[in-house]
Image (cartoon, rainbow, N blue to C red; front, side):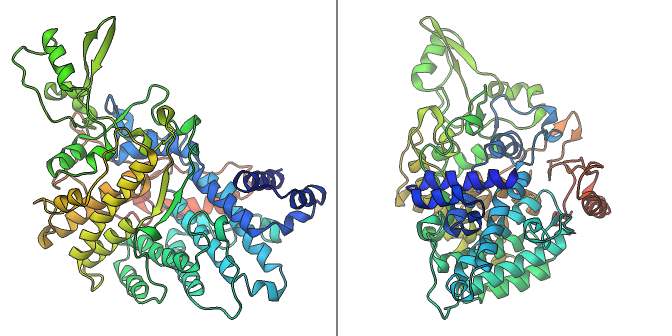
Length: 561
């Protein structure tokens, strides 16, 4: 049934994205064996859509958990004590990959491998590209799950094992780098036969092999940085190889690895970021930092609060606030994410809105700034815009190169890549806000960007370089939940001492630790691959930092203390 379901999904995707070829689909529908001749182009399109069309991950993993843990944003009312304890119904990336996108990527390569040699010679690039996507998804799933089956996975349909063995995360990181390196080399090497392109079926790079090669090389650096505490010598080796690889790296925003979704892609359902009584707002430390540094992205990330001059005067007239109150022109404030904030009278105005009468209605005046919902959900409140799902942008890569240089792991100049990263990040969010049709949208200008780079706390200072790079990388990951979270885990920043300050979370005097992975359960007795799953989990538990499998404060291998 899984095979039939997958085939139907592929065919529906083809009709959705292209005009249906009646003869072609008629042949698929009448010949039960013809599925082995499906066009790899159609399969690639379906795999890409499956990677991003995961509304359960959006609702649970991202909106409910990771955004709050990483303080990208939080609920209007702040956090409750269980913010660091609960992750129920999470980890949707695991099933989405192993059940949906992963099998299709393997199918593409298996289909190509079954073709005559003369045809395969023209499909070398086509066969290499799914490897990059497969590694990216494997890495993304392993990031919060640890060990996974790799070498023996997805082979049941091709006379392979039904019980694949698991590789440790250490082994996986070697495999990820080797496979990305090989793919980048293949895609940057001129082949003897003219290569057939995926063209428009490739929703990322339209079949451009050179861009894919750069993406693979750039992904090698991103993945390598996860090892900055676990194995810095391995990081240095990979960095040296990548910077000298002929494929090169992502060179400009146009080469960013992103999925630009059509309008309506996130319509309804679990994509709705402000439905079911939800309202997300900026975090206090984040908004303060952006306000104080005059960050132009502030109005792209967040909305002004409710205290305009008209509402202010109305509140005074109704004696909701003192008659001698002075209007506050600052319209951006963040909520306190510390669960103990409700016990501090000084923070009460952020936790509870005040109300005034507007005719027969009551208007609740909120001090905190809500997020620009459409950055995450372009269809929000009847929106007609479109979204961007970033995997690895040019701005991301700039900050990666800046950090590597600042740590002395490359011979590049950290200031150069830091400045490029800040500019690229502002450009990215300017484009994203425009496409998503946030309201209001005030386009950023070159003067806005130049002025921001001249702010005292933003001008690059070598003595504080690593902190500056990490803080700007963190803000740059506002639209990339997993990377914002991973950056904090890997670097320990932002924290209480950094310029963008994170107040410690407390329950009375007990410090509440940020969750670091999803819960991992032991397999049931009836699980077909019981022994391999149990052995993999038993091996991970040997690391005392891993903790109990059910603990979301436990650490996977790369997340070393």
